[in-house]
Length: 163
Image 1: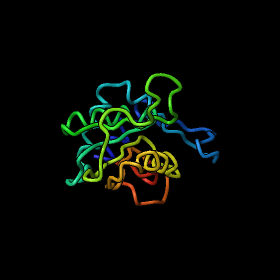
Image 2: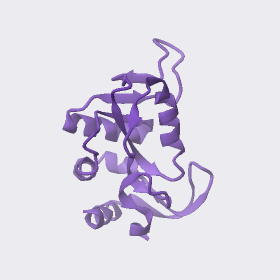
Image 3: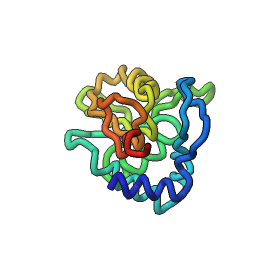
């Protein structure tokens, strides 16, 4: 499934060669514009199907943060019929001023965090930090693309697969 997805993403121009600065400030000779894939129903269905295959059985709820993570987590939670946790990057300065929206997990829950791209893990660490007040447990996080050597996350695509 990974090779087929990589070919589909390459065909649609999701992997772009060039000189790019990543979120962590590092340089890369390619960029994965996963958000572009989120706008393509066929690609999005393929990605979500691949993510669904990786959800650990003990998962009781799905969490997402950031633009790509929330989109993917929403679709996976819906398909799995699991509660959805939406984690904000920043507390809003109006309304309820919450950092966690949707389902609020508790210590009996086991959360699976879903994100689009994993480079250093800062986004997943931030999400876990914001959810720490719930005292819930975590499965391995799941991402579409793992750019790192860190295998603590499950991924549909590993960086080495696309080079």
